[in-house]
Image 1 (cartoon, rainbow, N blue to C red):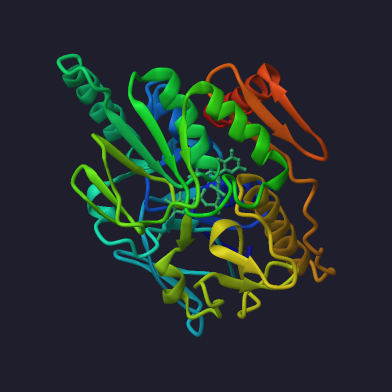
Image 2 (image 1 turned 180 degrees about the horizontal axis):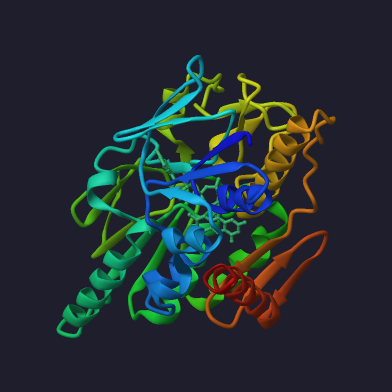
Length: 356
Ligand SMILES: Cc1cc2nc3c(=O)[nH]c(=O)nc-3n(C[C@H](O)[C@H](O)[C@H](O)COP(=O)(O)OP(=O)(O)OC[C@H]3O[C@@H](n4cnc5c(N)ncnc54)[C@H](O)[C@@H]3O)c2cc1C
């Protein structure tokens, strides 16, 4: 049996493993013991959802499916020897699927990493907000929470925070509009957030941060009990340890079959960049790419023509607090239904992987 190693067990890696199980000699490695359903982390940050309902244990999951799983960090790939190295193991392969996602991009803003939370710190955010809320009972003025970055994560978090805390929620965005990249939804989401009471500051560039204060490029500063950074992701630095060709942002370049510069190494999801057909960095993309990469490995083992990656219609489900959401496909819908559908998608994904 051909040996396939999947590195990274997020949305892309898990999907690929599901296609390949039982058909190849499969090994999955991930540096984390749990899968975390990232689209719902903001709900845990505000205490609406429990952490345990958005995660599952990878070891248990792979045991159930008779798939070899190592909870280890990729150290490097040696393509000439055809081995993957972790700190303690040397794993030989015929094919690799690299699906290690991205890392938080602090955009070089001085002090931001040290003095802000990112959404992965959801438990610390919850705890800090609780403490700040308690303290604020003794003061007349409301406490400030600054959310830096009004992309999907920032707007979803701001909407939850305004519902769940008594603080002023300041949503700061460097671009002239919120939701850069989702033009169709921008106005609607802007109005919903504004009506909820979120203070939206567009065209506002953050230049540095210190404990409890964010400095703006226009020399103003904003004090806040809590600063949360939602400025997006950048390439995982581990990409550079693979020896594969990367683009100017450090993402692994792949062709339409999702092969990297080394034909036996496929790359999918947030760590990859299809140079002929760039895709949005979403869970949907990672899942679809994971499936295509796995299928292409099976096709190539069977000496058949590989399939070209074709993205199914991208749909966006955005939650704006507990009872409101936005659904964007060809048209835009708002109301309670998108919020419910988003919750159902999360529950189905997580429970399916816990139970089956
Ligand atoms: C707050 C938030 C909200 C989001 N909301 C949505 C949404 O509503 N809809 C949507 O479609 N997308 C959403 N996304 C984006 C989506 O979560 C990502 O696009 C998706 O997770 C990418 O999947 P992936 O498999 O490429 O990487 P990931 O899911 O990030 O998985 C990467 C895996 O690789 C592992 N790994 C990393 N480095 C190493 C290493 N060196 N060695 C071993 N393992 C490693 C990690 O532990 C992780 O398990 C959201 C993201 C965030 C952060």
